[in-house]
Every structure is written in C-alpha cells, then in structure tokens.
Amino acid sequence: MTRRPSDDRPARHALIVTGGPLPRGLGSLPDADLVIAADEGIDNAQRLGLSVDLLVGDLDSASDGAEDRARAVERHPVDKDETDLELALAAALDAGATSATVVVTVGGRADHALGNLLVLAGERWAALSIDVRIDGARAWVVRDQVRLDGNADDLVSLLAVGGPATGVTTTGLAWPLVDAALEPGVGLGLSNRMTGAAASVSVSSGVVVVMAPGGSTD
Image (cartoon, rainbow, N blue to C red; front, top):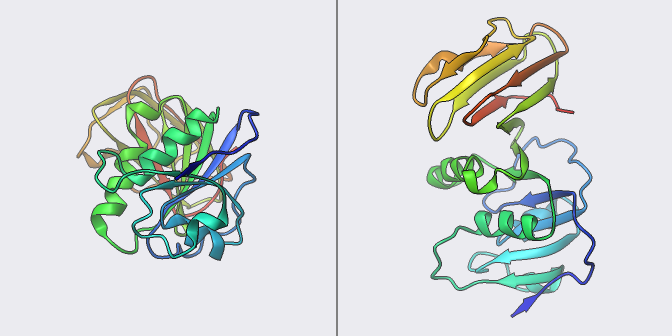
C-alpha cells in the first residue's frame, strides 16, 4: 500500500529519522517542512515526539501499526536494491527539499552505522545540503562550505569520502588548512580543534564529511 502526502507545496528542509536503537544525546532537532521516517525510524520518531509526514521503506522492522502513525506511506518490497535511508532521501528530493537533517545512531549494527554515513556522502544526493545527528555528535556532508558554531577546544575532524577532496580551506581551527588536498584513508584532517566560537570549512572539489562532538551550524 502506498499513500502520499496530499500537500503539494515544496518541502525546503526535511528531517529524516532512521531505525536502530534510539539515538542518545540528540538535543533539540531543527524545524522541518517534512518529517520522513525510514522504516523502523517511525518508532524512533514517535519516541522523540515527532509527527511523521511520510513513512518509507519495506516496513520489515517497524512495529505493528506503523502505517497508521504517518500521514502518508510509501511501501517498497523487502527484496530491493536501495536501503530504507536511500528511499527516504529520494522521497525528500521528490518533495522538493533542498536540505535535510538525518538522525542516525552508532548503536546497533556497525555495518548500518558506517553504511549510512557513506550513503549520505554519495553523489546522488549532491542537490541536498545534508547535516547529520549521530547520537550526541554532529556531521556535515560538505561539497562547498559550512560554518560551525561551538566553543574553543571543540574537536573537529575532516574526512574525505569517495575520492580526493581538493581546495580544502579552514578558518577558526588550531591547525588550519589552506587549499589543501585530503585523501580517503589519510589522517591529515583528524582531531583538529576550534580556536573560538566559530569555524568554517570550504571545499573546491570532492566531498568532505566534517564531524564534531557538539555545536551547530548556520
């Protein structure tokens, strides 16, 4: 059964909640034009007090009655080539979203946790500005630039994903990068620190996942 939202207005920002153990230490979540639950994410969304606009997935892990707890449902076969997170991201794009906050956890299966982060950095989602809530940590998929708000000595790590990232320049970090190249599997961008309340990361080409244990972004 498939039900879609009846409101045809474009969704500018989507909030996507994934399954697995309930994320810990999330703090406040941003306002969103569209809340999407990826399969078992419907149960996490309910625990977080969120009203779900769209439930997406094969619903093999969602609790009984999940379809009745969302405004609309997009159900897929269990045998499919895309993960439930990919289906949720595609639904966000189809709804007109230009940005998304994705709620994930490192609890549960390690392959799911790593796979989710790699999926989010995929080229297919280049039209979405993506930030990630990973339990109490935060991450941003950076293809152009991002500003970080936090405190002096907050940890910040930069990881190239999917290939080299070039023209990587930072401000407000203890060990600055200027027009640098980051390679996947190289630790050059790991364990930097903010020098004050704000920092920035810009990328000319490629994808960098910026990770921080706390803070926010404009």
